[in-house]
Amino acid sequence: MTTPQPAPGRARQDAIYRPGALGVAPTVPTDVAELERRARAALSRKAWAYIAGGAGGGATMRANRAAFDRWQVVPRMLHATTTRDLTTTVLDTELAAPLLLAPVGAAGLVTDDADLLIAQGAHASGVPYVFSCQGCSPMEETAQAMAGTPFWYQLYWSTDEGLVDSMIGRAEAAGAQALVVTLDTTMLGWRTADLDLGSLPFARGQGIAQYTSDPRFMQLVRERLADTARAAQSLGIDPRKPLQAARAAKGGVGTLLSMSREHPGGVRDNLRSPEPRAAVETFLDIYSNPALSWEHIATLRERTRLPVVLKGILHEDDARRAFDAGVDAVVVSNHGGRQVDRSIAALDALVRVRDAVGPEPTVLMDSGVRSGADLFVALALGADACLLGRPHVYGLAIDGAAGVSAVIDNVLAELDLTMGLVGAATIADITRELLVEA
Image (cartoon, rainbow, N blue to C red):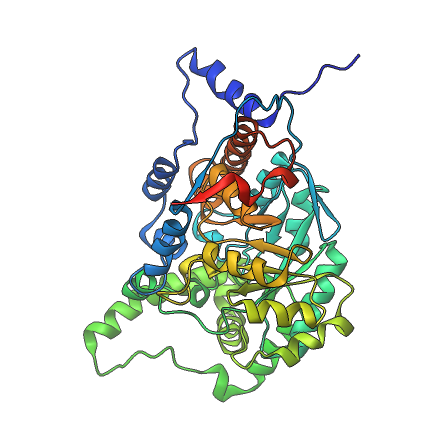
């Protein structure tokens, strides 16, 4: 006779309280504010700016949190709910819980092999990971690190259609179970934390491993090198300004070294080669397409067998049009507040989108989710599942793959306990009737 496994909430509490009785506190804090504080202490200024920063004055990030604060859970009593089932299925991907890890670009700012460590943490907790198109490891290597746990692939639509097809084909071959097209970053938003440091990781070769591992992209790099005028493109330094030129010379050494480390091959050979810089310049030229339109999306049914997910939907009319066009799912998202300052909060948009499209279409949500209680609220307001962004990267900064897993386990433990305390035995039981708007 098998012994029943403890529910995620009780199991996580036990894993923390038992060592605690011996004076051992958890490495990764369970408190959201403390998690953020500890991660900031562990990160460089540039890494913190990129991971934690938002657009403009940060109004959208604040709105994301304020939207969650407007909703309150109403627990029901005497429901005799002793077991919970957190499992669900989204687009034929079986989920142990309605949670996926969101794509976070240039995570190599946090630590070497960041994407592989995130994948290992996701696998340890049994949660799918949406690979970032701006990853620091090729998708094929990250897929191996998932060790059989499902994953999806995020696509930034390049200006080169051949590269779009190549990325899609590689994602299919690697075993991705869905294609997530990010719509809201056809150009970078006004990210003041990065701007004030003059910091763009891609300009140093960080976050472009999906590109430098791609045969079509490297063909474009070779074409650039053959074009001597483009290969000699200036980085924008004015030699008539000696102080700027001196600082640029010092910074240029670090940038050249970074490009050489990030580019495939040996660092010493890359330092002697024009290819790493040409790869960066090629990426900056083509990485995203400001002309992206519904006509582009309509071509996907002929270009991939994967379910198509559109990420970045905030208006109910866009959601309706997506489903009318045959898209399989949407992610209601404002990119974690990183693209448009004073944007509508993602949770508020979720309510409007779900009301508009009805109960059947698959709607996911990200931006502002920090805890199991947040996840419960988003599910009650109509999300089929949520994507968790910054918190898992904070866990990575504190304790590598184990830190990623700890953050996931903490979120799911709180979701499980919240379900048990309010009387929701399954994910389907989490409904708007369990909430009131403050």
